Amino acid sequence: MIELERCRQVEGTVWIGMDVHKKSCTMTAIDDAGREISCWNMPTTPAQLNAFIRGVPTKAKIALEASTTGKAVAHWLRNANLDAHMASPRELAAIRASGVVTDERASYHIAHLFRNNYFPESYIPTVETDRIRDLTRFRIGLGRDVARIKNQIHAIVSRNLFDSEIPQTDMFGKAGLQKLVSLPFPEQDRSILKSHLEHLKLLIRQEEQYSEELARIGKGRPDVELAMSIPGIDFYGAIGILGEIGDVHRFATRRKLYSYSGLVPGADNSGEQVSKHRRCKRGNSVLKYFLCNAVQGAIRASKPNSIAKFYHKKAKQIGHAKAQVAAARKLAGILWTILVSGMPYKEEDPALTQRKKARMELKARATQHCVTTEELNELAANISAKEQVLKRLLPEDEEE
Image (tube, rainbow, N blue to C red):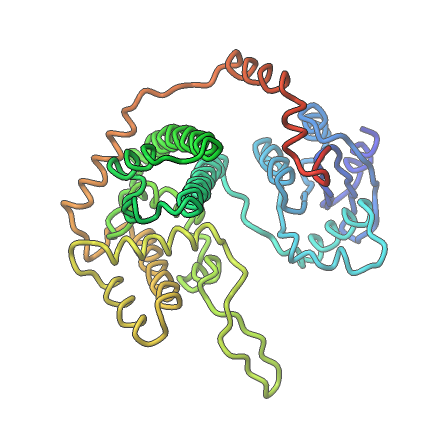
């Protein structure tokens, strides 16, 4: 690349800002004085990234905006031992300050913010951490699908006035399902019910598959065992929490972890005006989800623990919803302490932790099925044969 040749001829550091998109990247290189060296575009492909890596000066510092594609590019660059940094789009508001926004201007601003030390750098997780996040977030999606289908089955029962026929607390247990399928639904509702039950069967199979994969990841990891020493956190919750935290040492204090988890109230103070506690909408919502679920597990634990005691005390003062968030914040602090110190939770129930570990190891021993190219080709062929069906299912405004 001619542009990279110009960069190699510059003395001192070369600052490169990248505006990364799915199909193309726009890059602007500047020198230590802030003068533009060159600006160019290239396709976002492995071949072009490899060519860029081969030509970029070793003294170059590269900055880009966080996105799904941006993170993939950052990993690619870091794997080649390049000095790559990534920033949150929310914090890069300066790029959009102008009424005219182009890829060239965006990459130019990124380079200048980075050179002037105003670059709001964000954490780039490792490939393994990203893999854990993908698996746990997909499993969360399975849970939401299960809840949606269960609600739709409840609706079928209610519109046929059969609620009194089925024990609502155990509709999806053995007795409840046997009673459900024996009810005299109209033919149309029986057909819909059959589809819902088939979908639940598929989701159960997928959940088992991904739980086994997560168990294999967690087996033998000391940090997973440390997290499981806390009542209410099983291997899935431990792996999910650790995947979202990443390297715990990037949080200098536990308060930093509170903020990252979205467990602190928002504030908008100005002069004499002091805002009251408001819900904090920023933060890692997935980590907050795992921590709040862990609080519920601690409350249900057979032995008393400080998290459950704290929750019950707060619930009397501020209500259950806010008490859960407050207890999740306390739990985040406990997690930070044990992960940094490497010591198990002081209230650990060793027998319970051992049972959690045994369940994880049992799941990890399940036979691993590797998806083959042939399986994917067969699925693609079956779906492409029904392309018109997919188009009919999409709303008009979402059709490609």
